[in-house]
Length: 517
Image (cartoon, rainbow, N blue to C red; front, side):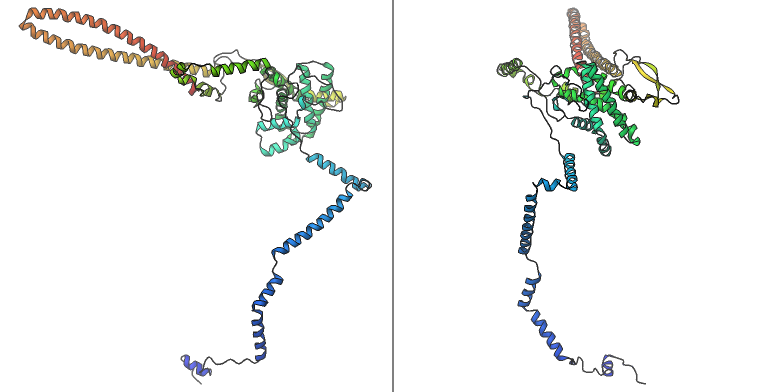
């Protein structure tokens, strides 16, 4: 048996590869030559250029394709435009008529309403006296004064509440429904007639339609949202009516005071829920700027006659021309227009403080939890459906309401503020008295040192010149009496000046105390 190779040389001899690498001989030499020539031909510049020209897309091809597509679209548009006014062919078939109605409904749904804003020069009545109710119409809502849009007013009220985005999206559909819009229109005009221009017949007709609109709105709200929605809706409706009055009659804004808001809110809440809201509920309304600003954010101009405007302009010109340069140079700060601390302090938000006295008087009333709201009850009576509500007797609960508010009295904040003032005054008096006593002690010590020195001198002189020492002693006593009289006058003047400075400083401390609290 032959031994295996021990190194590379023996392995090559064993495989008959002693001469390596050897020349390779291809069996199909002609085929390989032909393939090599084809590769050389395909790799030439002319073949590569031709291949790229035929297969790679060029910029101009996109333009050519776009032009051809535009020509096709132009032809289609021309064909469509030629048929667009052929109404007979459009409305001849039933299907085309239905499509046309769908198009109209789509346009009505997504058509944007234009915002109407009134300039100050427009001839529109901006007060209560210049407005009249045009009369009740059965199948048509009476427009709001000055062409106000109820939807815009509702959206303005919703914006002031800062509701959650998801809640606002759901509730907006209920607030802007036909029934809710009708409630705002009719409630506004009912309150206008009731408060300013009574008309019993129109008020009764409006109240009938208000009850129908409320029942429609009540039935349209899903049961899962009813409680949450109708906890907010009466207050929002009252705010919307108040905003409409402010927006429609800016010259009569003085009539829409706190009493007006209280009566309006009580009336709306009693209509819708049968319950009176808490007294002063309108303090949380964010509508204080409506007296000077519209719901669109523009400033209202105050109503002034021509005579008043001329007088104001003359007064302004006189104030700008007539001035005393000497006074300005003496007190330059008095003529500056910087914001005072008092004005900045008034702009801060203040929290409510209770009276430091007995609270309000309460009264217990019975409330039937199974009865309907006045509007729903009126609707049932109008349609002779009052018998439906008759059923098992529902229990009544006791509700507590405020019978009488307490009389005005100092609040706890006022008492605390006065106590702080008194403490600051006492502290100032203590510091003044302490300073006065220290000054007296200092004067007494200086005087005692001077007396001791003088006595030592006189004692030493008495041993040498007794007669002269006696005269000096008499003079010394006279000087002491004069100095005592001068010191008493000085201390009296010091105490009076300290009292005057303490009063001024106490007033500044009172001011700073009020500013801090």
